[in-house]
Length: 509
Image 1 (cartoon, one colour):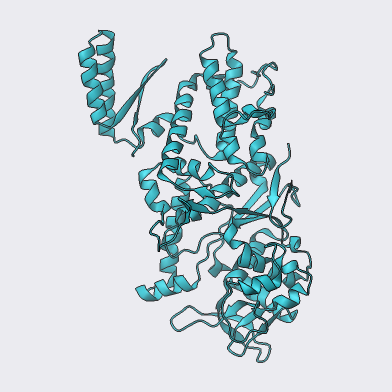
Image 2: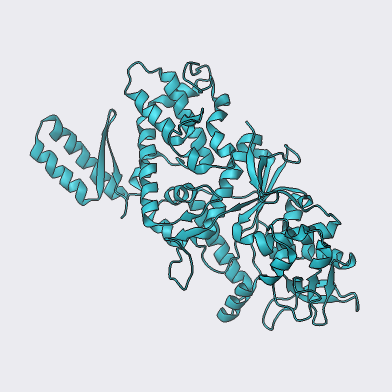
């Protein structure tokens, strides 16, 4: 089956065809590292991590190259460094490390490359110099280098093609960096002088003097230079949040195409994907409303997979209403899947025997695991994670492909003495295949339910379970009730199953 994605550039859902199937490339705009990442920052990380995993599944793990940058020079970084009296690297290294650790806690795989802006100054300077030489950029009297937007657009409308807006409309609502000496209101900064106390790099040569312009890059040129340096052009997929469509991604396209003399925006990136915003009871997250939720704080109260499930519970292009109830439901969903996983470990050995194949009389189910890709059709249909995690969808031939649909089928099969164990084993493996691409069910079930319980708590609970089993065997119900109360006092829930009793630490409210 073919992957289809919604291409922001064309405004249509189209088949994905990489330039080179042996080297599929993806670039996603990463964080500006001056503070902790909030939950809205985590949504593109998790969304495009699923896409990264899916592409690796489709094309091969070593054939997908994923770059997600670090912006480590910026006005906010400079201000924080000056306020604290330290070099910007002290700020950026600290928060880049925290960011990577927090995203790893959400089961996000590390990208192939994580370029930093400060490591690619020569690439940025060379690109800006090319733009000046081509007449696509100009130097102002105060040492700024600006991009000529009107000349690039040339009345063709290509500048606003990604944003689906005219140049005049974008000028009216532009969020561009202020420059007093602009030739045109839409022109944006490629290079600018550093303020006192800020870091300075030698920039492109001033055509009038031949001397390098001291200063630092604008935001947009950073991603153009880093993406080309790591991936080459054209990039297959360029991703990010919807808020980046204009001006950031619009300006990336313009300067990258102009630097190479291309007229087609697709010459920079063939497919553009943008995730929707997070809402908080109908409001956007903001400091003024006091509803900023930091990933660093959330992972102290919830397992990373719970947060990940919540972020994937809506289609990536749709808004997602972030609530405590969403997190609690996500925990319950994962508890159910991990419980099923724990009860079916005996089926694993059957799938490890490659000679075992599921029978062909089970609807759409294939006769071997390689053909189980049909179970991934929701992800192949524009990365529909909510449908991939869901239950049966009436009227859809492959309606049983959602995780909960397959889980229900497996649970039903476990209670049917006539079920073919090879089929059940295959079904379990199909669940795992989809879960691996979604980045869930990545823990041992016992570890999941114990949630990092200490050795002392584990020993105490295990001893109580032995006493409970003896009391129940002797039908000593008062003693069994006493042990149940003792376990409740330890915030432990007992789950009885065919293989005996297991336990979990109860979720935090």
